[in-house]
Image (cartoon, rainbow, N blue to C red):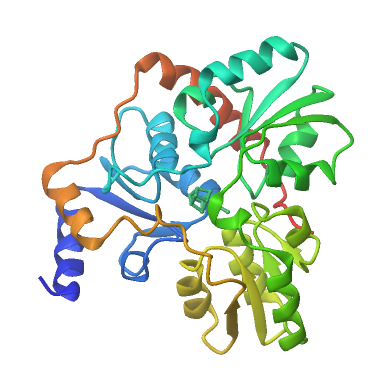
Length: 308
Ligand code: 13P
Ligand code: SF4
């Protein structure tokens, strides 16, 4: 099938089956183009929790679809490509969280949403890149175990006066972009602000004019008066940036900014997902019950977006 035909067929099925097609800002352009809603992890989890649709088709990675299932256990949640995982989420396991809890019994566990459901079930509250600073500030505990992203954890630490025990996880896509690349681009485009995601290394974040979530990057480049920007996150975001502000120029900070997992999902997978209800996210009810609390707490506690 031609790609336009595929897109049309998918839209027909979405309507027919009373489904909601969600796409993360890193998804392929042809998927974002036909999604009902696009957004960052926080926005998509909130949208998933409020939908009236019977089926949520989550074009993103597994932890995002799991979060949708945890927040809407009565709904069918489909992850069109079962292999779309997140290597950072797999860098911490439930037994490792249990061990941390035993080692630091007076600390609160704040887990980035980029974690598996079993890990969320052992957490006090979740956070995303858009609310991490506010969440860590707001938890009553003086000591915080922050999992699994050491880069986001280090970024948050610069804003809060709390003891933070930070896990050694990272996003392979963001972590392997280095300050030298950014400095070279800055010399070449001195008029362009550098805006990056907090999953970048601290020495990259230190060079940024703005540090924010994927949707925060979209908002910043729309509202800021500059005409071009150096963009420090996964290349899928360029679709939204160019759509929102076609008159501005966006320079991807590195050729390495590609998340192979976000790129696994293709239009063909979405069609099959809708036709065959696959892959349906299934989680043990006890995990759903426990993991729901930290996600709901995050939504309640979220206030101003993270920015610098
Ligand atoms: P956002 O929540 O900013 O969309 O980020 C999700 C993610 O996986 C970044 O790598
Ligand atoms: Fe995970 Fe990094 Fe991909 Fe985001 S970009 S889904 S953190 S591997």
